[in-house]
Image 1 (cartoon, rainbow, N blue to C red):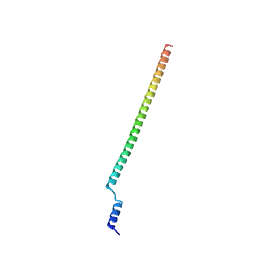
Image 2: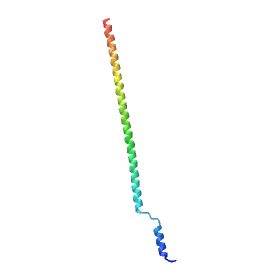
Image 3: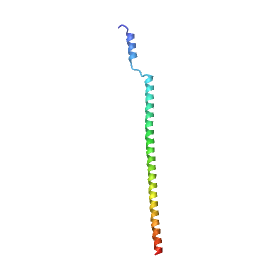
Image 4: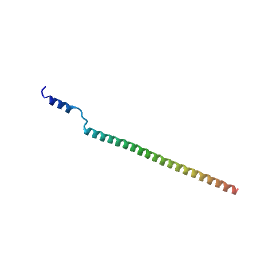
Length: 91
């Protein structure tokens, strides 16, 4: 058994040792993934808020239109009633 100490040394070097770089890389990757998840969540929230704001604005516009139509219809009724009242006074 020539050079037994060299063989043992080579086996020790070949054993898998957790490298500190791997831990650092894993930690960095986890941070990156967490950041990506937070960004996605923020984007979804912002999109939802934007859609809600748009729907609220559309609803408000629709209500204003309906109110204008109601007001004009009411005014027309009042004008007709006034004409009828004036006409009946003359008769």
